[in-house]
Image (cartoon, rainbow, N blue to C red):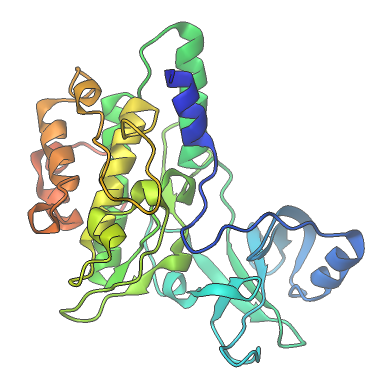
Length: 331
């Protein structure tokens, strides 16, 4: 399979493990009814996306005097009622997503929920967040790939850019982990960029995030297969914790360096053997020895040997990095 074919597979949107449903269509009448549930402070709505979880609009918020993203979902309790619940599901099926986890996080590199408004009927909840003017990291990678291919260059993000993205991502996830939260769905599609020339990231996609019990583990497999850690896929008796996110960060870094799939073959479920990473290509001058060392520690199959995100920030590849946004203050 050619590099181009591999990248096209990489760029194809991945489905989360717990849901594999087709996109739903929405007609004009349904759209108008949905808009009646949006809070009065918003106007100039533009429908951005319709999916089994709900609808997403771009809108102007009068009191905030800014463009926002409005996600319209139906919050459903286990008994089928729709009052006073903070979770929503895919067409009423699958594990619930809890928007209050993201609402509890305040970090420069995490997408911010500005407010939450419940519709008059009690059946709809409008999650209002900051609107990102830039691409996702997946789309950004696609642009770089096409440019490099047109110029006949070797494919791969420059180390200095990849390291800065990793620095920002690790700052965000180290903070999230300190709050006792594991993301469980880190992937290129869930990292947004501002419209600036130099990438400034915002981590999103916290719908599958969960609180890790003190001194305990989680057991349910969640996320996208290419980014799931071995212990999560195996559903081992010990479960998994924050180190599952470390694995995802390592896969992200490998994908950015290659602008392609990080593995020699695609991962599928059920998975009996983890396919090897493309180490020969990764070690072929794409990144410094220090960067390779950190990548190997993030991608250690045994979680007992794997670096935490906090440890990654103390590694010399990131510790001595000069960030492209030096004035950002981290909590």
